[in-house]
Image 1 (cartoon, rainbow, N blue to C red):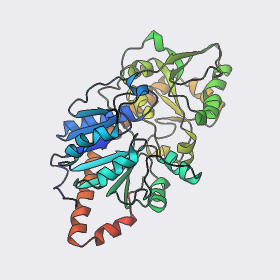
Image 2: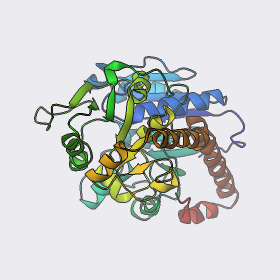
Image 3: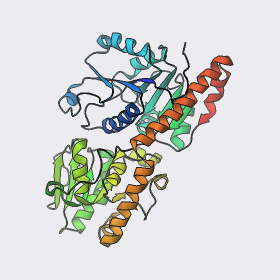
Length: 389
């Protein structure tokens, strides 16, 4: 049985079972969680984050304690159960995320807990839905999908929200998009080590490769006198490097400002499933914009809801668009970057998302109260509750 709480203006305890917050290596979750959890702590909330201590993150750990919160690194789920149960016993909100190493077990534990709101946050919604469409197992979802959660948050908006409801049974769905911590990501002096006319920061992904070759590698071939730079992890030896393409291995978040501030332009390339679904802005978009670096991005539905094309961002459909942008007059380039930074600081900060999350939890608390008073009727009506992107 759940217990309701007053509105989110009151302090809450949130217990989160997530992929990782301790290592930004090879994933996009950690940086987002760091910014969001910092903002929640600043608003007076208590956060406990449970993460399985896997070797590949342990070897690349760049955060060892959670400022303003509690980080629990555990080697084995059974060993972790006593601590997890203890924290859930007085939690107001319990959240399981996509790609949590023990997602199904964590879901069962959370749904059996007394937390007032039990939520699932899918930071990989297009990947989740693509796997379902292809008939592949989704290791972090149980047999009932998302039907038993009070609230389902999605990193992706648009039609993904409807599909989470119709295909996975989510009763109350809302987007919680990417964001940036402007205290971390901000303009800094350029660093010669990261100097580039066009940069790209991201983990290697096969389903991004065709777009990366079209928008980055072919542009490097067309502009042999200009300097191109890739930063990231897991790039294969057979990657099609060129004489004017430089490489820097994985950069932790604290080095991202120097990377972006040293680039005249940076490129955003979206994973195939995310680009096809749309409404899925990468955190790198907001990081670069907050650092004052103008962005060239591949095209996907919903992008114009986050940045105005040609005013705050350049959309590239092919190599010609990239080359044309890189030849933009300097004053125009700087003005575009400045407008994007202002938009980001107004609408896409971690603090803004924390406030949005509070509002969503307020509504979920209210729905839980109403369901208790009406014998579950309000909860059933919640099956049609979808906050569009």
